[in-house]
Structures are given as structure tokens and as C-alpha cells.
Length: 459
Image 1 (cartoon, rainbow, N blue to C red):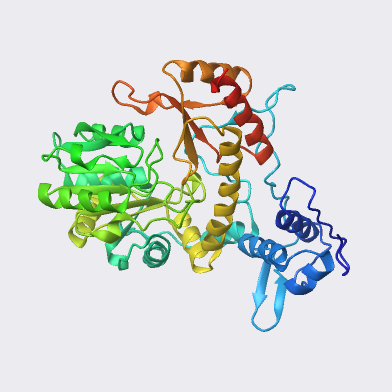
Image 2 (tube, rainbow, N blue to C red):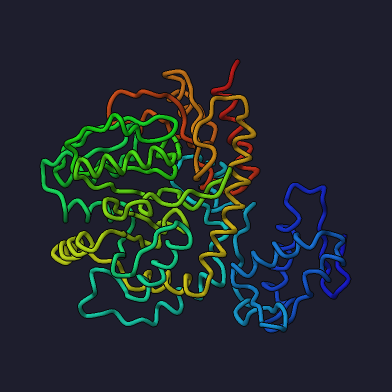
């Protein structure tokens, strides 16, 4: 199928790549190479779809991706145009390409299936570069506000409201360097050494490390396939740290009745709940559940980060809490001289203000859904957990099998992570935690997942 206007565009149903991605890739290359120039108008989606002999959805999805990347812009009542920054830019890594050069010699780069890393192959876009270029013009303040830039706080308050159901004015939001930094500041501000703090078991090791470094007495709190087991929580905890959107690492999504029980427990115990909204934007069976904070802002401190949406290199996160907690955290932060760099804050503000981040998140939901389906399909029939949300899933194995699989996979060029590593005490569940964000392509994911199946599947 070919278009009838000047550019030779061809899409096919027989290829392994979705047709909308084929079209977006060809248009992107045409703009990069100067065959489509700044200010040039593209055909209407209906016209181009008819020329290619495909549904209009194929074209609109391709256009939406290029809008999100900054290659295209819409002019009200006029149509779709190539932006003025869409030419003379360096090549953008494609989803199917390698994310980095191969190491010395002819050995291929290892395929990384470890969790906690987002896919960045579609991140280097005109919109991304524009945001950082504009951010670089912002002068640093002599005395930075420990709460963060007012403009970013306003944009983030609007973002968490529409994306996660977190309704808060900007004065209840403080900009951090990430979710872990937010947890550290919270502990420094409202807890004292020796306070008993609940942490999920198995759970996020960095959160345990942060709280232990602040002198807290860590209390392991068991989780099941749904997340934190509220009935097992002691009544003398000052704070409990939880990942209800996609429990790390087992992947459970805390159901509404258990969320309500957790909030009731916090009220009875006089405790705070630190809600790390890990992977909260990405769910594949139904729409993401609103954040726990929205059910009771009085006892929940909401922690978010750009690290899983964009990349950890941005170094920006956010903390949302009731006013007295925000004031305490801001004051303690000033004492610690802890601050978030101005340029990344402003870059994120630009991405939010222009709608680029929202478009990118929508696009990445589709990307991660395809990646999740690729891994789950390759591992079909094995005992899987947590495959309805987030950027990782778990495949259970008999005790001892996971460690052997990690060693053999590494020898054959695939990096894996064991479930045992995420326990503070004796492992209750054995298996592999399979992340699908870091792999450079779907084909690499398919290859690596097939190896996992070979190593842990039934003989």
C-alpha cells in the first residue's frame, strides 16, 4: 500500500511492526532527512488513510506519536504541519534499534531484563530537546525555595489530579529529587530514630535502606498477590511504606476494600502511610486505580517520580501531603541543604505545560502494553504474577532454580533478577522478576523471554 502524494510511503500488514509505527517511522525519517521541511502541511488523516488503503486510526495514531515527539504541530482550523525544529536534528533511536553500542569485540550487548528501568528509545525527541533548551535559560535563585519552583508545583498539581486522582493545591506539593528522596525527607522531618516503621516484605530495598539510615526500626509486613496484608499490620507503627499501584516486586494491585482497611488502620494507629506510586501510570487490564492519597489525604503522603515515566536522569519527583507535613518537610530540607536542581525542574515544567508529557505517557502505555504482551506470551503456561500493571512481572520457580537461571542467562547474554533478593528475611516466594523496560526492542524481549522459558519452564 502506497500514498498518492509526493512522499513514497508504504505500510504492510505482513510485517512484524504495527502499521501505525511503520508510518510514523517513515514520516520521522522524511523530516529528519529534509524531505519534509519545517512549515510543510501533511495530508488530512482521512486523505492519507485512503491513499494507503488503511483505517484512519492507523494514521491518527502515527500523527499522535509524532505530535508527542514534537515533530508535528496542529494549527487550529488549518491542519497538521511540520514544526520549525523538526529538520536538521540528529537521528532518533528507533524502538527496534540497539540502545547502545556493542562492547569491545564482536560480543553482542546483553539484553537487560532486570526491573526498575523505563524504555528510553523514544525519549530523544524534538519536544525533549526543546524543553531542556528552554530550561537552560532559567537563572538559578540565590535562595532556592525548598518546596521547588512555583511554576512546576502548579503544573505537577494539575498533572497528578488528572492522571492519578490526587486533588491538591500547589501548596500541598513539594518537588523532590525522586520518590526515594521524598521518603528520606519525610523520615527526617516527621520520624525519630528508633520509631517503628512498616515496610513490605518482600519489598523495595532502597526504601528499606533509606529508613534504616535514618535510624528507624524496620518491621517487615507481609504481602500477598493483592499487596499489603492489612490485618497483619502491628498497631504501634509510626509509618508504613507501601506500593499499592503495583507492589514491588510481586506486582499486586491493592484492591479498594483493602485500601479502605489500610486507611482505617492508619487512623486507629495514628500512623502515616507513605504511598510510593510505583508504576502508577501503567495498567493493562482496566484503567489505573486512583492513588490511595485521594481516599484520605489526612493520613497518606503521596510520593511520585519522573524516573519511571521518563528517565532517572531527570532527577525530579514530588511529595504531596497535608499542610503541616509539607511545612515540616520543607523546613527540614532547608536545614539539610537538600535541593532539586533548577534546570531539570524547568524542563519538566515545559513538558507538562505544552502537553508533551501527557502525550508521551499515552504513547508509552501502548509501548509497554506490547512489551508486556510479548513477555507474557513467551512465558505463557508458567506461574506469573503482577502482569496486569507496571513495567515488570514475576515468574515463580522452585527454590534454588532462580539463582541458577540468573547465572546461566548471564553466560548467554541475558541479565535477570531474582525475587529472593527483594526479601529482607528468609524468602517466602522464589522466582524471577522480569522487567521489560530496558530491552532495546520487542525482538530482543522475545529472544530473552524465550531463554527464560527454556531455563525455568517444565522439562
